[in-house]
Length: 108
Image 1 (cartoon, rainbow, N blue to C red):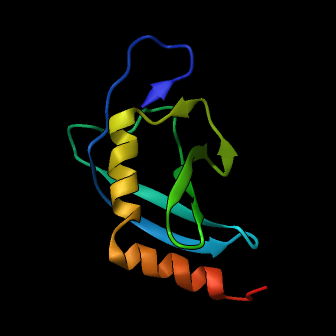
Image 2: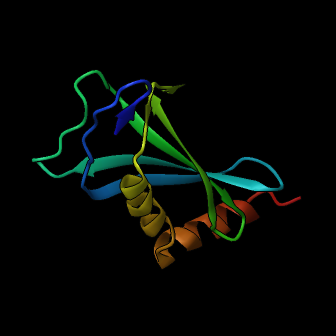
């Protein structure tokens, strides 16, 4: 993870995610991810409650990733490699189907 303004950072290796998909509106579905990391790549100590919000299309394509700590945008962002790990998870068939299902809930 990269802390805004820092020139040095460490990259996390995710081992899995707990997730939930929730329809935001007629265009977007938010997928809230709670990451699990390898023991050798722990989360920064400053983060108490990291969650990654993936803003996705109703078809399951990730458009934007936002890091939050305790439900508030935080000063950390994901490295390119970490983003690739998250995007690969979101593109799995299981998560894509959860996104499509959330998008159809309460359809407009």
